[in-house]
Structures are given as C-alpha cells and as structure tokens.
Length: 326
Image (cartoon, rainbow, N blue to C red):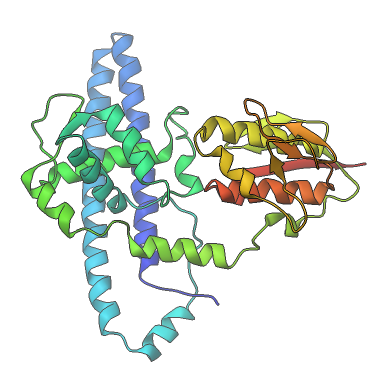
C-alpha cells in the first residue's frame, strides 16, 4: 500500500542535512588546499564559509528535532480514520542513511565500556560494530568528497557534535578524544537499545522482497561476466567463481563466524563441508578448510550466494551479478 506519514518530513530533513554536510566537507578541503598553497586569504574565506554552513547545519538539525517532537504529539492524537487518510497520500522513497539520532546511544555505550573516554578512531570502530544490525547498505557507501570515508562514519562524527551541544559529551576533551559527560551517562539509561522505528522499517523492507533475490532473475543460458560485492568488482568466467569469490571475501570479513555456513544444507546434502566425500564437485574456499558444493545450476549458485549473505548478516543488494547471453 502507498503510505504517507510524518517521518517523510524527517526523511527530507535528513537529505538536507547530508547535502549541507557534503558542502561543508568540500569547502573544508578547498580551504586546506589553499592553506597548503599559502593562499591565506582564500583559506580564511573557506574557513568562514565552513563556519556559516556549520551553523546552518545545526539549525536544520534543531528544526528536525522540533518536527519530530511535533509529529510524535500529532500521531498520538490521530484516530484510525485519520491515519488511514494519511497513508493514502503517497510517500517518499526509502533508502536514505540512518538518522543521526540513532548514533547517540551506541556512542554513549561505547564510551562507557571504554571507561568514559576514547580515541576517535577506536570509538568509531566500536560504534560501527554495535550498529551493524541497524546500519543500511547506503550507510557504507563512501562520501563523494572523501572516498575513504563511509557515510556512517561521517554521520557518527556529526552526531558527536550535536551530542556536545546537548551536553551528552564533554566539550573540553583533548583533541582527538571523545568523552562522556554525567548528563550523557544519565541519558543512556533512558535510551532504547535501538530505534524501534528503524527496526520496523527494516522488517517492512525485508518482508516485501523475495527471500532470495535470484527469484527475480533467471540466469539460464547466461554466462557470468563479473560480480560486485561492497562496491568491489571482480571479473569471472563461471558462476562457480562468483560463489567461491564471494565466500572468500566474506571469510576475510567474518573470520570467526564464517564456519556458520556449515549449517547451510538442502534436504539431502550439505552445501558446505570440511569433507569432500559426498560432494559431486567440491571446491575449497580460499583461506579455509571448508569445501563448497559447486555442481549446481547458475540459478542455484546465485541462490547459495544469497543464503550465505543472509547467514552472515548481509543484505542481498550488496551483491550484483553481471552476465551476458551465451
């Protein structure tokens, strides 16, 4: 059903926030280059412009917060008939980054576990682990202005700035260090472990798509050309290479968890095993002592790929397959 609700305005604010943040990052890079070139006037102008943009960004963040509070009140007061009318208005497409507010508790939690403070890089690494169940595919995309910076990491740093403004983190911490405040400790106890709205959205998106994306594609009479995983493209000659290459990449990402694939099996045989016996075409996954069954059709191989992705907590959309007609 087409649906409209107050979160669409929050979505629009999130889009605006990210656009402003990208511009701030760009202007900052311009200023840094000007400073290196000893063009101090231009560097000063860029610094002032970045300051103005940061002020604008903070005002937009405040407006979003105000809207969320007003929308929450309105939603509580609406009856079912009004909600139904709203749902029929149409809605914006999803797929935007995880909202800044959802970083608050993970940041506070990580800092508490680290004894109250920590170096930025380590804090962010831990926050990324805590937020794995919440972050979307789009959160892992790199920033256009900083290809080495994933969007979630940038968003977490902006969240830190807002938390300092709200008194949840200390403003006078040493450079490169984040530190929780007493107000932050108290607030963490009242915050839910994860934003329920985000969980609902994730459940909704998963419930409306096929369990295996291969159901939407027929690879019969197709030849494999390449596959892409997490933005990295790999050329291949066979579908078997897609399965083995994907598994090798996932093994590097999930060293201690990869053996969970051993539980994947059909009605009569295992898809992965540490023994070759019983497999028609066993191929070892690079870096492991685990064999994968590859005596499968192209469609079945891609289905296995999606099952492995799901088993290790990834979304189907992280894998793209390129083919050509035979």
